[in-house]
Image 1 (tube, rainbow, N blue to C red):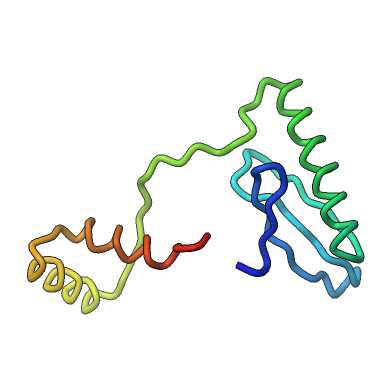
Image 2 (image 1 turned 180 degrees about the vertical axis):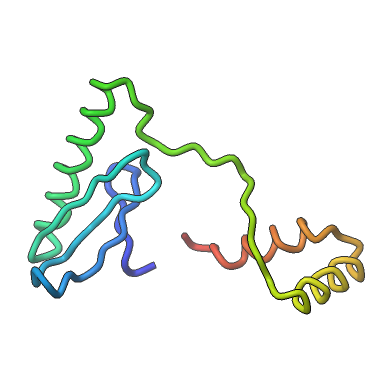
Length: 112
């Protein structure tokens, strides 16, 4: 993804904020918010390090686990006709719907 940077093993999404005319970054997968702003990419990376360091320090002081834990479960809604097609496709391959969905998600997130 071209709008993501990684800082010390943590991922952040970067967007352009037209109101401030600045780059805006926000770490994802954390148990709280940690964002940062800059006018160029070099400064953005420096600000990201500062923001992340501050966030991790506060988490440590307050006894908070900084990284979200994912259960591996999520619900999604699809149109009934797509559900039917999914069932047919899974059955014809001798797989469960869950297996087919897992494979599709794996393909969708390759390279992330």
